[in-house]
Image 1 (cartoon, rainbow, N blue to C red):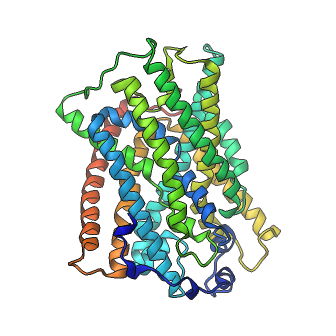
Image 2 (image 1 turned 90 degrees about the vertical axis):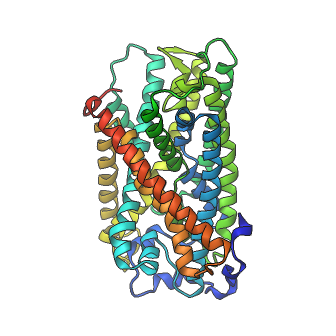
Image 3 (image 1 turned 60 degrees about the horizontal axis):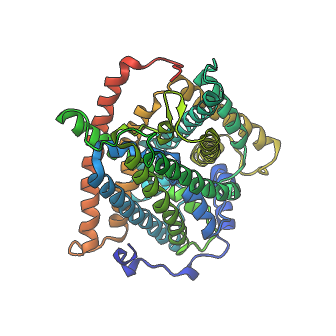
Length: 461
């Protein structure tokens, strides 16, 4: 995708001030969120860890399920297009951020970019709320999925056990409560390195397990036909696109780039290259092997297919090991998506003039972050059908943040000629994914309405 980026956008690395982090700290409008959470100390490899954790998450285990609505050809094509467009879009955001850094106005947050490029109302009333909903929704989804994986381990060991799903969600939430106290985004770099390894490991387990079951007589009869009538197939297809968009979604590219030590030129491209190498290995292996093994019987989480009516189709220790790897990475993903919330809380309650670890800043930090995790845990326990709501968030949130706004930001910032291919490529991406996002949102609302009769607070699903 690098050949699509115009050479005029390359910035002079030496033009950025070498001590830009100190410059940020001494700005008159500095806030505690930027100062304490978005520390600019990382290298390009650290950005690779952050990017991989934020994108290559356990949502990839739902890709075989998305294929049940799309089939082989459309499913693989959607994965390829999603990879190409998001890699391209994320690089465009990085170039826009580099451009502002070159001009001495480094942007640290998505809403800051929107305010500068689109106007203050866009940042405050559109991008800011959407990003918060997407990121906090991801925290809720991780907490719920963590509880579901814990329950799966419990039921394998004790099929007649009486513990409910919400109890496991609360246990996972307590673990998140501890990790949420890690002070800054940069402090997560070693955790996110472990997360990168874990996503490779549980994806390999999911792939090996699917191939083993699919190649034996234990699995279901393979059926790759699309289920339902024409209407259900159509809406199912758009739901599947929302699932894929959510899997590729990030929504925090500016915040991740803000963790880089200046000069930032070229560092995000290297980080994205690391991330997408891992992404291609994991996304395609899990999606193809899972759909091949289970066909249109693939469940929302492919690991659920490893157990048939309480009977494990592979060794119990293998299922437990895969779930443990998944649970551990989910905690890292949840903490990464807490960072925009932490930044807002720190900006509101922190004092940039006091030391970061003074009582003045420590007490509000612990209280606000603990309340944030507690609320997310409560929502996850109350709404175990959050998958439907998450599809809606994906359509309303990830589509604009990751597919539409990057190309709009680029065209407005660099103003490429209307005769240039890059201008029309960006316009095409914006128009196509705006339409897809709108239709996917309608499909998600329809699915929520259809499933509403099954909703029950604190349901043990």
